[in-house]
Image 1 (cartoon, rainbow, N blue to C red):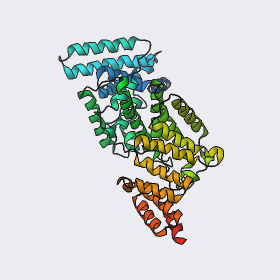
Image 2: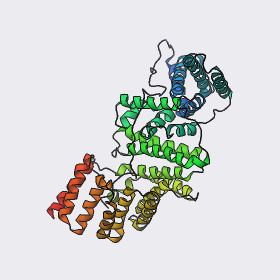
Image 3: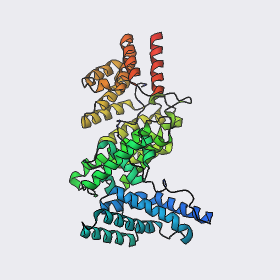
Image 4: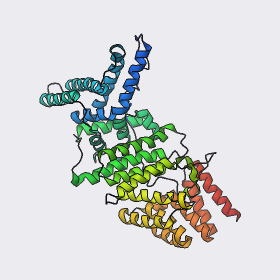
Length: 450
């Protein structure tokens, strides 16, 4: 169905970004003055970068959970990495780089808190210092990343900044990179991130995994923020914007992390499956010259088989847990479309039934719109237009560009040329993606020539 938009599912409009970024190497020169042995310097940097890839989020999460201050934890860890690049080339890299970094960061963090607090809160400071010291001497650092994710998605934090906050605090992405992905200026992103971190500290937002009674609602906020990040990355259909393309990958990684830390939560696996299905189609979404290719016309040989297999596994695992929710239904719809690989066409009857369930569960007008498009493949355009008329009772839908693109397609199928041309005019005027505009303009031109 050519009117179906090529998106991953529901769209989000995350706000965006943060302070001048915490990535441990953004402010550290590639070569340090006074180092005589370039090999040792390069080896030290390689070791530090490997430690950052493995454990940045784990280290920040632990320090933040103990201090209640994300920004201070990031600063302390950045200082620790800077010291590593000074000491390791001369002294050799430690056997356990993470423990070394945590020891230095702990000292930096405690000193910083002591300077800010003075004599006030001395007992609490001593407790924090003792706790951090014990952790630094342990064989393995406690993993508090999930608690950090929940803090970033706390109800007190503005929904628009949750995704950028997670990307910086847990993954260590710098503010400039996040700002680019969310189409914001680094300054604006930095200011919003600073405010969010200040809110966490001043409001005393806890770093813990919610109890079962409130877990579902809080987990939904975490998953929604992850999907918001993915949706921003998905918008770069051609994959030419490296920052936005990478954002989709980072979101998938964050969701994989949640599934590992909460293995019994089916919705996390449902979201993971949904994103993997969508990302599997990235190479087929645009033609050689950047032209828009609707889902029904995509070259399935360009779909990523490995991603699809991973998505199918995640969806089956979620379904086996016996609690069906939104992301699982959206992923199942994508699975029904993927059936075209085996049969040559999507399983439209299954798509309609899944949208029935999704509309009943969420009441989403967007889901109802997509259901109408699927109905057209099963029962014809007239029936689909009747469904679309019901959806249009919600004024929000008539302000949604895909509604007009769908209406234009369905009207053209029934021979209502003038109405279809009007709908195309509206759809083209509302569309911001030049390649989609060109696609709709071509459809309109074809209709006019008939």
